[in-house]
Amino acid sequence: MDILFENNTKDQIKEAADNNTLLLLPVGILEEHGPHLPVNTDNVIAYDLAIQAAKQIKDTIPVMVLPCVWAGYHGKELENLPGSVRVRPKTLFYYMYDICESLVRNGFRKIAIVNGHGQNPAILQFVSRCIANDYGVNILVTYPMGMIGKAGKQIKTSPEGGAGGHACEVETSLVLALREELVDMTKVPEGDRCQHRTKFFSGDLFPEHDVVNFGYFSTWAAQGSRSGVLGEPKYASVEKGEAFIKAMMQNYKELLTEYYYLMEQEVTDKG
Ligand SMILES: [Zn+2]
Image (cartoon, rainbow, N blue to C red; front, side, top):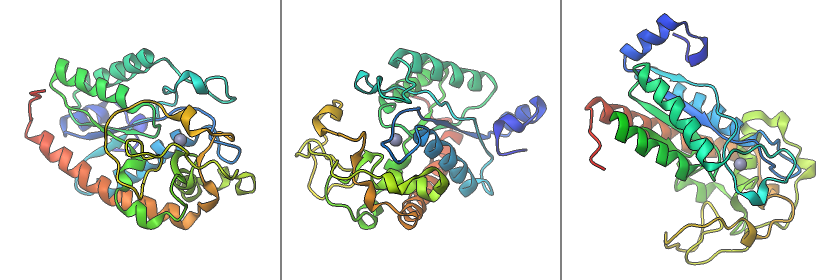
């Protein structure tokens, strides 16, 4: 069995489904990531890290990685920027729902989405909820940058607002560690730290101040980015990227293992 889903034959796929294989489904978007990162950044993060996560568990859990869903959703405020290829929220919902439904019909009952893009989560969670409702299959939705966890605070060095989550210290470090040849550090912009940092909105993946998880709206405009960046990518490095990924992979290993064995018990959705 090849770890890449698409390299297997129909008979191997059938065997994998019969063997309770866990599927990792990467999803991202094509969108601007400042002057120094490619528009494919979120897809690179989702796909490369899904493969790394699969390698963490493959000796103990049967696992395969699907091709990356490369067009996700972002708001209208970004759609006129060069490189933006977005789909409407409902389109992403139906597209992801149909992909997951096909996989369930193929006999797979353990699916973990690895999402590289910050505006996809609510839609992906809705997909998970609907598949659970219709098929009794509970899909796990994960966000690699969120999986760094508390270690991120120790690794980052930019001032508050510098790890804003978009082409920032963290995301740039990740691409440097994954595919350094795609990053042009000579073009890194400065001075686009997230401005909107309050009790309710962190403005940083690893905030120093306490944040009440109160509500949600897109703060893109409020953050006032001039360069298409939210944060301070000048603090990025290969070493930091590797440290973020190390912390992330430890959490992925634990979460995917926990999810796999929880689903082995065929937990029914009581939602
Ligand atoms: Zn991104």
